Image (cartoon, rainbow over all chains, first blue to last red; front, top):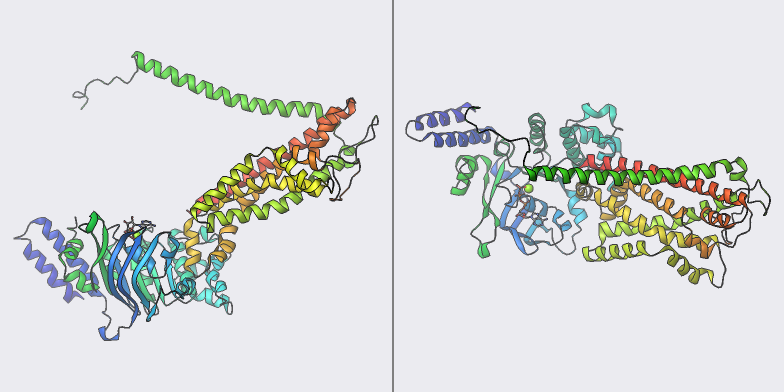
Length: 306
Length: 297
Ligand SMILES: Nc1ncnc2c1ncn2[C@@H]1O[C@H](COP(=O)(O)OP(=O)(O)OP(=O)(O)O)[C@@H](O)[C@H]1O
Ligand SMILES: [Mg+2]
């Protein structure tokens, strides 16, 4: 690990003699992201199995495209991060992956999204079945005003997974590291938990029904640094069993947790003066942060984004 | 710093400022007086009803049917039973219907349709109760005669928009994030409504029913047409006309007998206490529910 980070540090120290101070800072922040990303053990490229395949996906609200022409693959048991400036359509795209956009009147998905080769938006597809396999964790913790146990058991009861209910609830809480904290008060209200605990409860609730994919929209943005750390550690552990797509505003977070990172941006020059989100670059996280192929990515990850 | 800054005139010495202050004071005074007036009015109503009604209250008053004219020691038991039965039946009709309408409006209706339904409910809430009374009279009483059942239909029509609108408000308060959570776990909309939205909003729904009951229990016009020709007997036969508290107030107050007039005051006191307790209880419950829901946001 140190072999990766040392040369970078030396380089930026050398560069300081010629370059302006501002650029040094940028270089360092890029190097730090690269370091973070490089610390992760890369997933062997050959093992990749595509779970979700997006082909020319455009999502529009009442006719205006929020995100346009996205083509990318989400790989099994990888953590895929969506990063990019506010309003570039990260949430919109994420919510189209388990048909949560169906709930927004006027939201339309064009192009194709396939899940193990099945078109998610095919006429016969039941969004309820989709969401059972592709779970979601939201930006703000949203536990039900029920007991801790009932929160986790909710999805299990919904899907008739009532055999070994206690066991399944315990296992989901164990996975999120919440078990020891709540095992003595499973019957008390979930609303009494701290924000970080609530968010881990929401993750446990999503995991209990054994989805294959878990979509997370800035799951730690409402949490303090320690709670954030726990969520990040958790994502690292979950990767062994689940495919995770995470939206984050925090590039360090993307660098720490993600195997693959997609950088989105807002294309202002689009026709009719519209603002469309576009996928700029999608690459293994370390590549994206150390050797961004697109100048816009480089500008963003080095903090020169305008 | 103090040396460089120009002197500040924080004290208002100009005429405009003084006028502004005077107008402000005047408005404040008027508003305060108006609120004091409202409180005073309520206090006067309550005090005079207690003063006139309390002496006539007795155990017999609650347990006995009215005494024949000229005799004392009668009560309004038949009216209490009648009002209880009729409001209960009306609630049994209006509550499920009102809640279903609210659910439809908040969870399922396209925005345009929801707007229409809301408009209709508002109009219905504004229909004078005497019109509701005569409508039910024409519909159910003509031909088959008066009955407590018919009266409860009239009361239900009165309660329906109150319950539907209040329930709709509470359902709309339930955070959208809970709906999303329910759906994201693979629940259908109906499941999410039944298992998450309704339990979250239940306090508010109960409140809406309580407030509507308080309103219906005190209405005279709907029962006047539908359940007013009554025997002075305690009865629970809803196929026949039953007495009601508002009606007994009305009838007793018209009587030349001083005793009957006292009975009217006492009945008014019973009704007033009932309505006040329900309103205050409903209000407290609704505050609690709102606070609980706020915490989830
Ligand atoms: N329900 C909606 N109806 C209409 N427009 C919407 C809706 N949700 C999002 N948009 C628009 O779509 C665009 C993308 O929004 P989105 O929330 O997906 O961005 P984001 O990348 O997640 O932003 P952030 O980082 O701030 O969360 C924005 O211009 C937004 O105004
Ligand atoms: Mg977002």
